[in-house]
Amino acid sequence: MSHGLDVCTRREEADLIARAVDRDEVAIRMILQTHNRKLYRVARSIVHDDQEAEDVLQDAYLKAFSSLASFRHDAGLGTWLTRIVMNEALQRLRRRHELPAAPVPDKPGPVADIIPFPLAGSPPIDPERALAQNEITKLLERAIDQLPQEFRLVLVARTIEGLSIEETSELLGVRPETVKTRLFRARQMLREALDDHIEPLFTDLFPFDGARCGRLTDAVVQKLSQR
View (cartoon, rainbow, N blue to C red):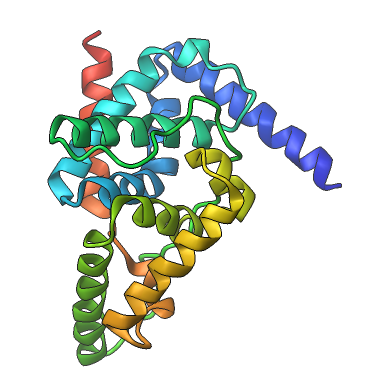
């Protein structure tokens, strides 16, 4: 049953890609809005800056859609887009002389699941709790920003994006044992800074929705229409 569903999903994705290659705006917007949040978190975790992460995402999307016709379907679209975003972000770090220990390899890894975000219609929480959670989330974001690059990439892949040890190993081009070691150390450093406030907050990190998501989508669609 699940295999049939996977085949159906791949066919739907292939159809969506084919429509996007033909510059179907609805298909393009569907791809953008499906992947914006996950890819923004990836870019933000590398470049440490909200606005630069948006710039990375926009440039990566333009590169991706320009070469979408050559997409080989040997990995999921999300994996392919993630790799382009990571490479774009890492290139910016190289220009700032902050080259990470290991470059991202060319071989794509398995697709990562998108962590669900609260829906617009979710019941509101009380203002004091919301304020406290926001403050702790900001502390966590800053703590992640301060992690060394090799630890931060593993943490983002494993904890925020939900990849397995093997998937993270393939994505970053390091051994599974190295993934485990770096993840343990990254969590240890965060716990030292934030004690018990870590695990419940990961789904609230680096939000990218609403007006910001819409603005980026509109900008990419407009630039693609001018090509």
